[in-house]
Length: 215
View 1 (tube, rainbow, N blue to C red):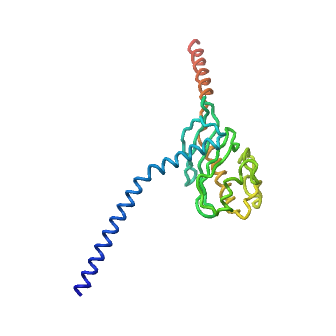
View 2 (view 1 turned 180 degrees about the vertical axis):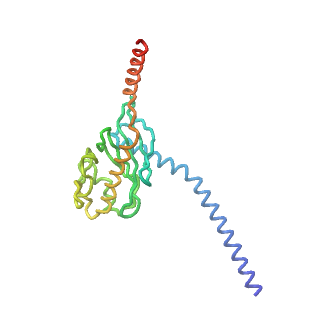
């Protein structure tokens, strides 16, 4: 019995030591990789905003957030290098066929879709993964230039205007839901600030104030 007791004690010590060492290694690896991963994700988002807002690399963004029901959307108010408002880029996530489908959609000031990019997905290669290109300009499910307030951006099988990805209706529905939700968030967010317009308004207010004072 004593020998058995010693064996159990030794096994417990070994297992505990292994768990501690493994946990320490994982914590170390996480601390080393967390920064670079965050930088890669941030750069991917920045590049995505440029892509969905017309391709101008000199745009400026201001981050906002909108909460609708139990979901929070990240909204980027976008202006060009001269401070002229372009519109909003919105991150939205829905459940696709294989998991979360994260989409970044760009809208102009009127709510027309300027572009989109897939920031992350777990869809089936060769099927649902086609969402990356399927809904782009010239694609079979082209949504570019359309406005969710004016166009029925659901799949044709559901009475909408958009052709679903072949054999991937679930992914198509998830993608279009993400775009429609992004539009709603964009409409509720503060619009991108047009510095030129703001300056004009400020000047007009100043003139009006002087006139009132003169009276």
